Length: 62
Image 1 (cartoon, rainbow, N blue to C red):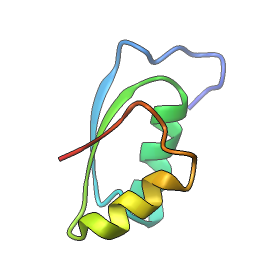
Image 2 (image 1 turned 90 degrees about the vertical axis):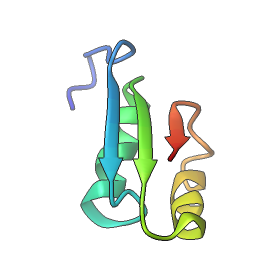
Image 3 (image 1 turned 180 degrees about the vertical axis):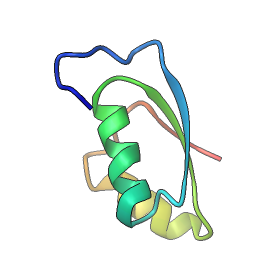
Image 4 (image 1 turned 30 degrees about the vertical axis):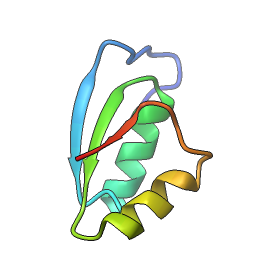
């Protein structure tokens, strides 16, 4: 995602967000300001992945 774009009005759902491509996409969208709903098979792994970046405020668990 381009750094100069403001994604604050975007709402996204990312599956498989605990690792790999899903994790990368979720973190990039969240850093850009989008509200990101994340899901994965293992909630504990998902929470650890989200905490890596200091608990970004726009990540929501489902």
